[in-house]
Image (cartoon, rainbow, N blue to C red; front, side, top):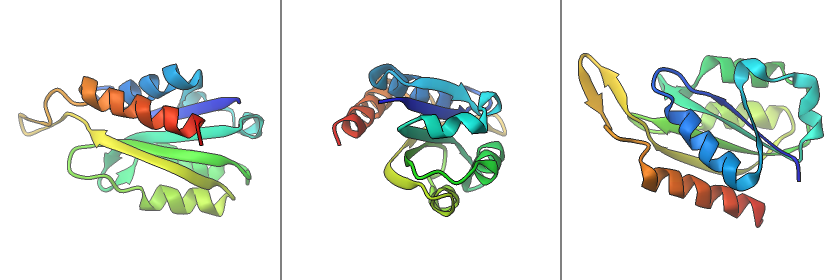
Length: 142
């Protein structure tokens, strides 16, 4: 099975840590949003889309990539890191509009700094990453 994981990780690399943990157990190709070639998407059997949650949504560049991709009848999964709460609603709608079937979702805390405060310090931690690996293994077995 050919698997691609696309991520956009800003600031502290929280989401990239999660994406790498998943990619390891899935033997998946891992790309940053800016390195994705849309014409290659149909060659994958399973595609993951993930970023941090900013203002209640995934990164705008990830959303734009999905809006610009051709319709693909693919199984996909969504993942995110967050400070205040995960919200996959918009990205699920965008993927559905492209003909994708969301087969799983994963999210965990990510450290977030604002006004000198560090919320969720230490996250994603090893437990979060192990949960990401377990999630990824589950996708392979479904």
